[in-house]
Image (cartoon, rainbow, N blue to C red):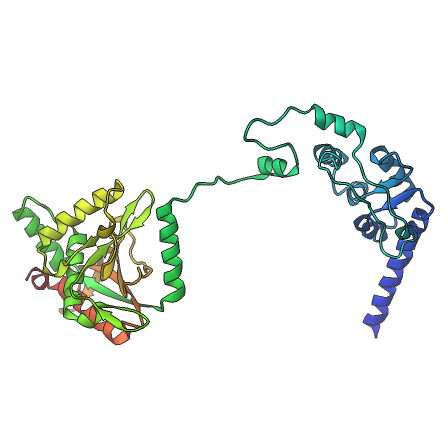
Length: 378
């Protein structure tokens, strides 16, 4: 009941304040816009006659003084009079071809008579007419242009076609594929020692990423049920093992494909990966070299990223996110501790094709291949 009485009191007070200035408006001296009327009703301390006298300077010469919301805001000290004057000069009604009436609030006596057409003051029209014409390809002076020039705090960069395709595929992937995740920790000492011996014995050097690609191919060969992808009609199994790897280019990430990586020697994989990564950065890859693939490898270990997860690259059902290698303490079996180098790998998998059981087997096969390098060199 108390709340209802308070609400009635507020409404009655608003109506009394509205009647105070609308009764004067009915005398025919001025016209109040609806927005200005609302502000005046809530601010009874404003002297309407004094406000109307100030508004007479910018009102049309038709015997009516027009009080706008901007005039009331100036009277309340919310905006500066110079700003309002500038905006009126920069966006004159007549120059914009806008005519019409400014009605008083609903319920006012003046609402039964149409207010005069609002035209720009002669001085404002003259000022705009005297302004220099915009340069070719530019825009006429006005409020939109003003905001664009003085308040913009960013720079637009055109989106390349490649970036549009990448964005579309990433969005489709996250929205339509049921991403699931697993992470494993792999000891790297054996692989690092094998790589050092291999590079010492060969003029061509192989990288950790080359070995990871080979290990991923070994894992898919060991767990063939993971070498598949989803369609609406059937789960399709790939006839060979093609491994994509993420390569950074100025236009965004691209995934060149090492075809039939399961049957290629490590030096062949290394040579192909280096060649395609170089041509990818120069935007010289052929479409068939970066489309397809059975799985992907995204390696940020060289940037000292310890662990991350990757988004699936449709229609592939798995992607391996490879982190950096770092030392970790382990029990040495003799009551002490020893340091071993470990690498964390996160596997993102499409749960429709590679469920948790298959994903666990895939992670185990990858771990076996990397911790026992002889398996991937066979």
